[in-house]
Amino acid sequence: MSILKDVFVELFSMFVGDARLTISILILVGIVAALASGGVLLIGCLAILIESVLREARVRRRR
Image 1 (tube, rainbow, N blue to C red):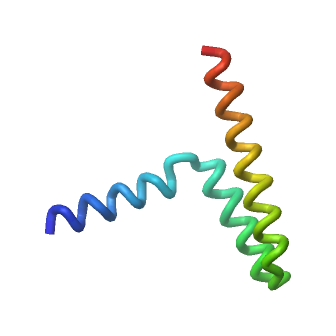
Image 2 (image 1 turned 30 degrees about the vertical axis):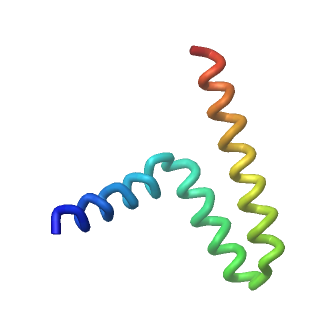
Image 3 (image 1 turned 60 degrees about the vertical axis):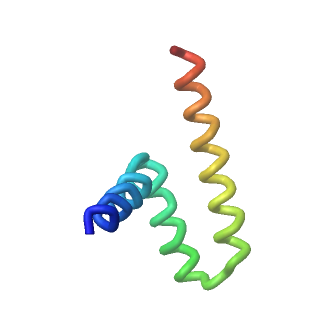
């Protein structure tokens, strides 16, 4: 049972590890659900992923 708990804790921490990314994706999923368009979801997720990677690269460059 401990392993199952550890897996759930790890999955939860992965989901909320970057609050800004999590909130962005949840907002995007809500918009896409309202529009019911898979293309918007794909483009939006790619845009959020690129923004997140670029932001992290800027942070690491400053160190």
